[in-house]
Picture 1 (spheres, rainbow, N blue to C red):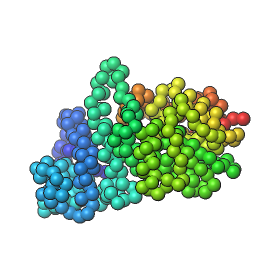
Picture 2 (picture 1 turned 30 degrees about the vertical axis):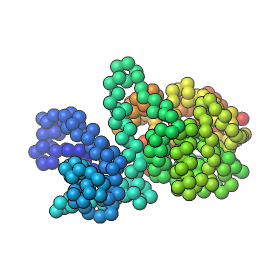
Picture 3 (picture 1 turned 180 degrees about the vertical axis):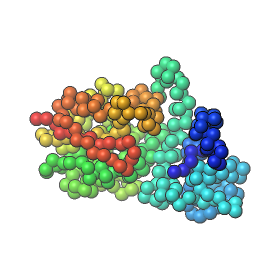
Length: 348
């Protein structure tokens, strides 16, 4: 596993930290933030694309990307410290394990997502405001023409490429199903993969105007514009169309309050044909009594950026029952850690 920033290099240092003789909180505070920022900036300025082409010196990289050589070298050294690149004789290249995720030509590249993470930097700076007085960031409250939508939806598309095949296999459709709606579905890739798996299916995405504009560009560039229709609208207040056989609510629950989630699921129930179902893909809290893990950062992040949080499977089951769905079926999604798929059929 790659190191996050600087960690103890020799045996004595490691022993000291394990024995609580060294100030390990200082290491986390000092080096974790720049480790993330280095990745974001390297993605935004094109470092990984150049490294994917072959080994380069800091001077060559600076010349090609119009960077200052001292900064380029220090950036490369920081990436080497995190085991993202390796250096030999003054030349840098991507580590073999990193190519899968950071080569722009890879089908599993997440460079767009890393570039979008640069937005998070300013949001995290407001964490103290959040814990002191509850002020959160409205990350979706942007004008439709804000360039943010392009990087945001592109990043979400890249993550969806990793899990969509598994999700499409895990979903069950009623016999003769023809229509699926993806609520706040952004890029629409989940619907596209479902249509690929079920040729008689048509997919519709309902999302905010900025998201839809960015999604249409991606769908056209990636070659699935003919499989997905896009409709501008707020899923909590706008016209959702229908009827549908399946409603997707993917990675939206953590951006909504409990009352908003009940309303979203109630609206989903209203647009389903008899025998239809809703599927919720999201990040959920660990069971009560379990020690918090890295998913706690996600709960804090969603509270910071939407005023919401991650919820428990039991809360989701309660909301589903309240609006007329049966007990949800759980499908584990292995491509994205901590992500789980639940599908529930509407009661007649």
